[in-house]
Image 1: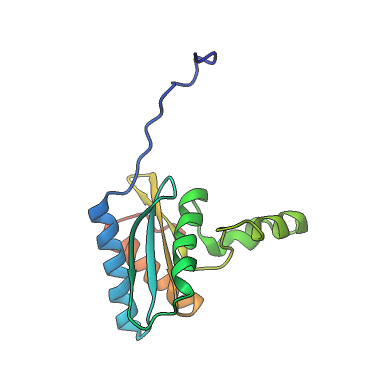
Image 2: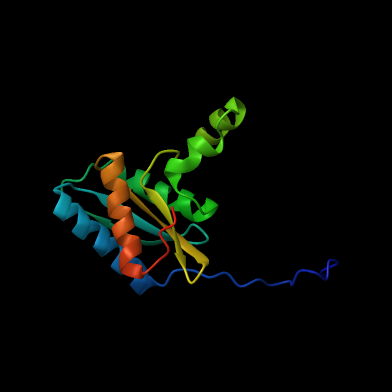
Length: 150
């Protein structure tokens, strides 16, 4: 029984569709080819569940989990992974605590996916430089027409 009537017992959550997730990963890989780099790219839905993943042949194997965790972090918190250190700037406890959390990535390459002003997921790219990873992630947003206010 819900004692707090201001909140419903069931809340709908917007999530990215599988076709959109597949288009996003393909766009990131296309951008990586253009840049001449090899990446792993993941898309998570807004609950942090893996929705799509692509690995380019020759991309670093260690970057598989990093890409997935970047997508998970961006989807879960709704802001770019590269913004973490700035978000906790001046608070050493938070900086150390958050960076020690499993799956939480505190460097660039993960971006939230917002469609029609709703957070529907996150995209994570790993395998190239931080700037190139982010450029590939932005290509994923662009193919979806997703907000890129990151």
